[in-house]
Amino acid sequence: MKNNPSLKGLLIAVAAFVVAFGIYFLFLSKRNYYLVDNPTPNIYYYNINNGSEGIISGGQSVRVDLKQGKNSIRVFDQNKKLLYDSAFQVDKIRGLLNIAHQDYYVNRQYYGYNLKKDSLLLTLDKTLIDGKVYLGGAKHFNKLYTEDFYYNVDEDYDKLIKNIDKVESRTKIFRKQDYLNYYKEYYKF
Image 1 (tube, helix red, strand yellow):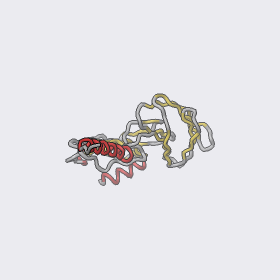
Image 2 (image 1 turned 90 degrees about the vertical axis):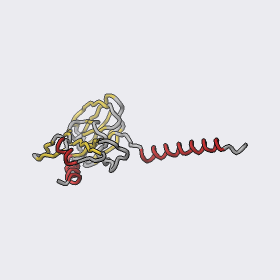
Image 3 (image 1 turned 60 degrees about the vertical axis):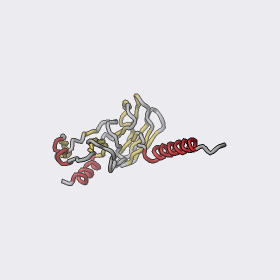
Image 4 (image 1 turned 60 degrees about the horizontal axis):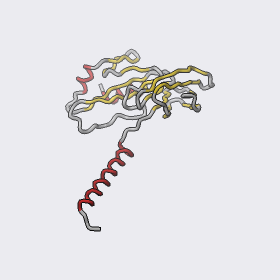
């Protein structure tokens, strides 16, 4: 076979393409999953869609498999006494099951060039938590299931989003105390 520079170039380009996609899918792509979260010190047992029984300790998050559409959950206390039996609708590719019906807050963080954080916060809604006003318009949540966020409780915001030529935002769901800690550290009023 003859030395063909065009064929060599094509093979190198295909190899670079495969390596680039491999790196993206292994290291850079955002994983989509569902969590059962328990911010309380209590232990709960749960059963999703009549599957096997799961257990979640205080302060723990557990990844679970959910199907698109209608799902059911049965939640038991530490003595395996039924607390409730409920159904919920899954429409998106990530979500959070709040089996203890505790307070969570969905916060929107803005990214972009020339972003004036303080003036932006003043224009957004205010949130009242334990009698104190917090700027930024975080949305309160305490129902069984939500999927209205981008980052789950066990993920952090991206430190930097590159190639933004305008202001963009990402949402993250926080446990109540985690949100208060984040607010105090991030905004530093």
